[in-house]
Length: 367
View: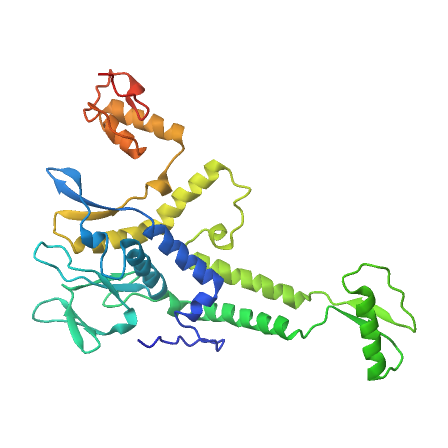
């Protein structure tokens, strides 16, 4: 499939592949894809008002013959983050579960029309036509009466183009070596041979040495420093990184990799919770809804975000003890959160008058 080119005022070629040449785009997309694909996927069912966990079906472990679930979710998220939409081919089998799940590149969707007879959307992929019963569309940001989500690549084409143009300019500038590190000046006239001899003599005496220099014949040494224009370019490069981080709502320190040394454990914990709530949660809900719509109506898919919301051990223990004593959690449910083996009798709810030591560190009763 041909990759579209997004015209921009810089003249740089901005496509889904060249956009990854900008480190901020690569960092933002990979952070989103890695974070969500790393969350465990759970299948649940609602019965009699209670949520039950179900065994994970094979299609949610290996959605197709070429990908495992991590790779599939990662690819789906990367497509969403770049193009603002993702299309999943998921024909259903007799048991109501998808036979397989495969990502279709957004550029392969040539046309989307509403079928007046069925009420479903028809997707034209090359010469083939598929119904929305078989293809599930996920959109990042979509306006009324539109069939395709807004593409971040298209909306940020000038920003990404500026970043690519600056990187190319700096690469050519330093690659060609147009600006020397220093110059030797003299008011007198010298021949090219004399200039070459002076340069060679200077390099021989002072290259990688910090010895005092003795200049004769009116020679003067002057260092070439970074100009104000160069500093402004570096500041502009940083502003582009900030713009890309702002679009994806990713904390700046996760992209530029600074600020972690001065943060305390509690600060990092709060940042992780904030990152999930204000950045990842919306993406998670989109995927959960799309995957759940591919399943039987009573089943739902849920991403386990425990690691992002995980508090310190003491806070978790106190919270779990309160839930156990209030009758909202059993001791074995608390032990499961801490990845500990259940014990006999731990599936019963504890009365409020019972001792609070039946939390995650409870010791199974001796037989």
